[in-house]
Length: 392
Ligand SMILES: C[S@@+](CC[C@H](N)C(=O)[O-])C[C@H]1O[C@@H](n2cnc3c(N)ncnc32)[C@H](O)[C@@H]1O
Image (tube, rainbow, N blue to C red; front, side, top):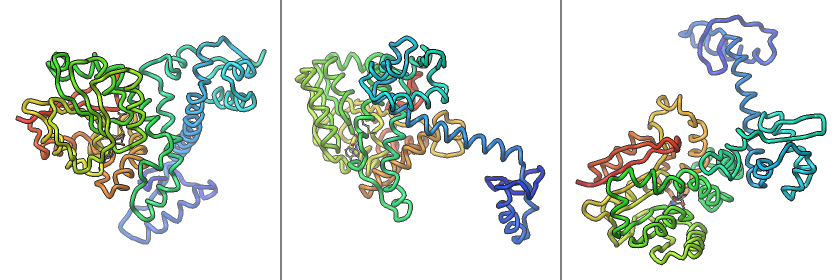
């Protein structure tokens, strides 16, 4: 019998076994082809796969609830509360008790919140709070759960693309820039000065003396604003396609009071940048460009002699078989399919996708004129690789 994924394996088949009987059709069609051995189903494997799918359903549901727990501040409230009733938790969070109680139900059966039926008490264990609250600067995984909801919001549009091609533009994604800024607020901001800059020897000293810096696809500009505040002798500029993201970047610059930073909404497809820079950065911003090739060659052209391009981009291989053990491979391919690839295709672009991988990235950097490329990784950031590239 054929297994669920069509492979052949040993094991017994019983026609009475409900859902599996439909697999007889697959068996019959394979037999008709005449050149395949009789497929047999491994029922233990099918049962294990069924369990895997049930786990997937529960995890998918919990991701939505985790996003809600983050956005409503429930995790933050519970992180600071002793065992409490749903009424107390709702009151502390300023939320409707009936909704909070149902959410707590999902959290308890999902193994996130603990519960005592006596007194109807709920609490978030310290170890769970450390991965789910805003108090944990680097490891708040609830931030990433928001992507599941953001992507769910464009499912109809993506299905239309499956049928008719094309893409979904950035403007269709509700809250994308907000969630992205929270994401890079964890992977980039806390590590920028002490871990990311030291990947480029001498960079910190150069920034202290004063250099020209460009951030490509700066989004809400948090990285460049932090750099501008830290290195007042250097001058910084951030470009991004999104007016909304640039407005948020400018608003943050106002609050820091830094005078050495500017932002501009700009389509970088043909990289119309006249100035020259000592340092160009791109944080998670190359693979979803319409024309990553022209952006990369534009970056190479805009670098001063001896300048550096520091590119943070998704860690992975260009070949799917190398990504089977990737700890967040399914998550990244999903974001790629439902966002990164699609926003590029919506601009009639290359649709490279988030999982373009290190092999393709190296090839494209070489083609753009970067003859020296080093790929580094940082322990806090399993999602990304860091490319330090320069021309000869
Ligand atoms: C994944 S986000 C990363 C944002 C930011 N660097 C961060 O780490 O938070 C990619 C950014 O590239 C920008 N982008 C995409 N296509 C662009 C284009 N053609 N020109 C300029 N920016 C573009 C998007 O608007 C988005 O802000």
